[in-house]
Figure 1 (cartoon, helix red, strand yellow):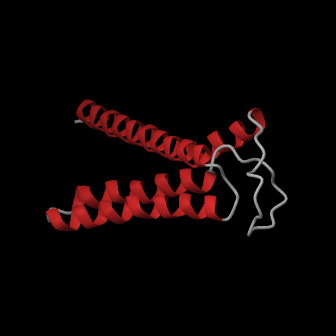
Figure 2: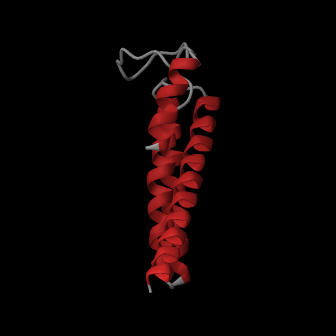
Figure 3: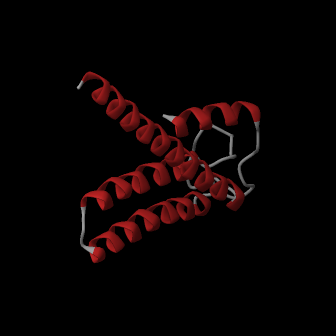
Length: 124
């Protein structure tokens, strides 16, 4: 949700035309900055990797999980540039927004655990 809200607000405030190259996609949208697809893929796949690697103890499985979680957003970013939908800086900004969304979610989760534990101590 943080990634999606950031995307909507940013595209309203910052207007940047898509690259002046032949596009493979025919979209009515003309906002290029930032790549919401890249941001969402970072947030989703790296978020899944965070959850999975906390539950898994096998080091090679963790490495494989993070390799996939990093490779997919890189491929998504490359595809968005290849299709003529984004500049490289749009994709880089999308990566940063995705990481920011993960940080917000992680901090909120930790705070939720802390509040829940604090409430349980008071009740018990």
